[in-house]
Amino acid sequence: MNICNSAFIASWSAVIWSTVLFSTNVIAKDIAIYRWVDENNVVHFSQHQPQNGNYSQLTTISSYRAREKELPKSTKTASVDDQLAQYEKNKAEALAKNEKVAEKNCEAAQLNEKMLNSFAKIMITDTDGKNKILSDKERKSRLALSKENIRLYCKTENTKKD
Image (tube, rainbow, N blue to C red; front, top):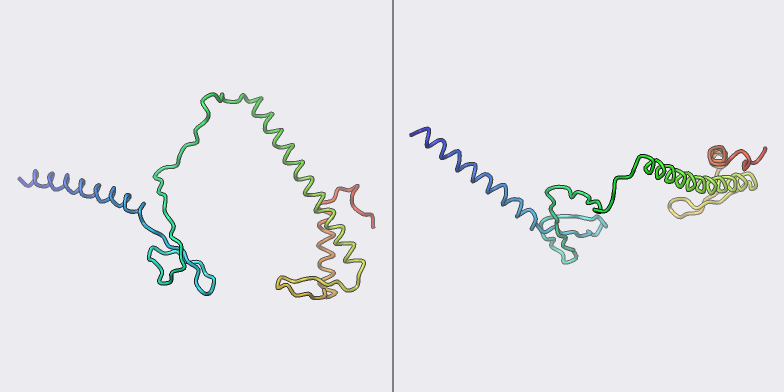
C-alpha cells in the first residue's frame, strides 16, 4: 500500500507543480508596470502604482521562444557566386561611405590645424556652455590631435606639405 500511495502522491505533486508553473506564466503576462519621473528627474519603474498622479502604465509582452524569420517561399538559396557578388557589392558600398567620412574628417582636421596655427588666442565653448580661451598647453594638445587626424584621415595627395 505504501508503494501505491507513493506513486499516487508523486503523480499528484507533478500535476500540482505543472499547474503552478503554467499559471504563473499566465499571471506574469498581466502584471502592470508603472513609469514615472521624480522631482530630481530620475526615471523609476515599479509594479506598484506611485502615490503621485504623474505616471504612465506600461504593458508587458511575454514571448516564450524566439520567432523564426520566415523566408519568402519563392526565394531560392543564392549560389556561391551570387553571394560573393553581393559581398563585393556591399564591401564597395561600405568603402565608398568610409571614404566620404574620411574626406570630411580630413577637411575638419586641416581646418582645425589652420585655425590653431593662425591665432594666438582661441576661444572655445566648453561642455558647460561657457566660453573660455585655450591655454597654450591646450592649444598645443589640440594642434597635435589635429595633426594626428590629418595623418589618419587625409590621403597623401590631400595633406599639406610643411
